[in-house]
Amino acid sequence: MKRFIDLASRSLLTSLDPERAHALSIAALKTGVPLSCPPPASQRLSRTLAGLHFPNPLGMAAGFDKNAEVPDALLRLGFGFAECGTVTPRPQEGNPRPRVFRLIEERAVINRLGFNNEGHQSAYSRLLARAPHGGIVGVNIGANRDSADRIADYEEGVRVFSTVASYLAVNISSPNTAGLRALQERQALGELLSRVMAARDRQNRGLGAPTPVFLKIAPDLSEAALADIAAEVLDKRVDGLIVSNTTLSRRGVRDPAGGEPGGLSGAPLFARSTRVLARMRRLIGPWLPIIGVGGVDSAETALEKIRAGADLVQLYTGMIYEGPGLAARILREMDAYLESRGVTSIAEIRDSRVEAWAAQPLD
Image (cartoon, rainbow, N blue to C red; front, top):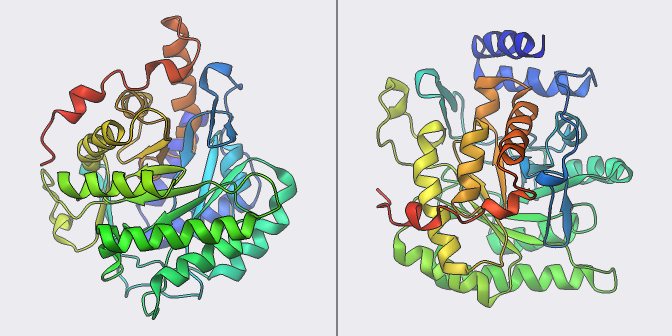
């Protein structure tokens, strides 16, 4: 029955304008009506990372719940954590429409949304109200497109959300805000991370364990750029990495909509993002947590991210094509895979294919 609901919802939503379909998905989750049955908790799938206990390694990526409207509904679908945002200090409309395009045969999406969101205060109010519910809810912070000091916008995001977020994700890798990815260059990144980590420490002083900070990077980076990012992340004692955001590459994409500008997500991103993930794992060593993102739409793709060096994984585009039951289905199949092989913790398979993925060319 749940699979039928998934197929019916997919058919309905993919027949609508993408942004209209997204709004309906949020509205459906707000009703509280169960859209999927989460699997039973499994100790094999749990992880403790950056001081946080994740009941399972599967999360909803940023971009779905931009304004922190439905994090608890996402957790009820089975996700071990949900990431809200990207949120900017001031509300902004984003780029002109149309700005989201489905590539159905490719199981992909191109978006050039441009950090459309309601701003810090709206998201903060919702997160403050839901805080007693518990669960791991991260906040992905960004900068307004017309900001005079983009790093100050990230500092402000840290100040606002440190007390209501389980972790903070610093998003400098969206391709849809002009010049934003320049913050990944070493000198700018060093200043950004210094100021962000200092703001985090000031905000959490005297309040116990500091809120973990993760850096979200692009998949469209050279070997040298990856090495620079790894060096700065280690030097500034960032708590983890998210690898990766959407890509500007259209390698292998045949759909005519592939010519639209914007960031590509979904199945075509899997290989590139996983190669970058494996390289970052080799560069930063075994201890720093990494969240692997890009093309996760099944238990096998989720497991492969972990084999390539991820501790946790996130998805978004996969749910567009598979429906709200995808998280539960992935978790059941991951747990069955581990049980069938006598693996007591999913951490045991991490890095088992790092070298194989890292040896592949980036392009």
